[in-house]
Image 1 (tube, one colour):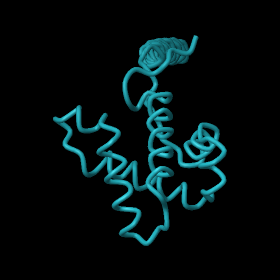
Image 2: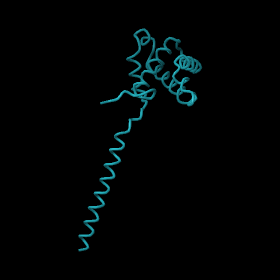
Image 3: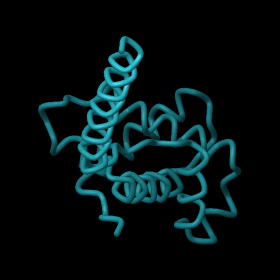
Amino acid sequence: MLSLVVVVSLVIGFVVAAGMIGRESRRLSLQPRQPVWRLEEAALFVEGELVFDVASKLDGETMRQLLRIHLNQLQFKSDPDDIDQIAEEVTSVQNVYREARSQGIEITRPIVDAVVSAHFQYLKAIGALGAAPRAE
């Protein structure tokens, strides 16, 4: 008789735990995915968006440095309350160019402009800026 009570309570515990896990996994699956910025993925996307003239003057490591600088500018040096400043490409290009030159990176302004523009496109594509495209 005691073994029957133990088995029944284990079965009830398992059913309750499975129901809770199922409910939480369903709730989490309905939430939108959080954007994740990956350097290699961003570099491949930006490389694909650059025109040949710009891409031929830019090596991979310099582009990765520019992407890191731009992300740091957006992440740490922008006011979270001022949404217009984050979306302002001209300001971002100026800041990235100034920071790159201060770090000793030999780069021209049109190259920085093209990289920042393509990086904004990548950030919009992953949903970090604006609404992410819905995957069906």
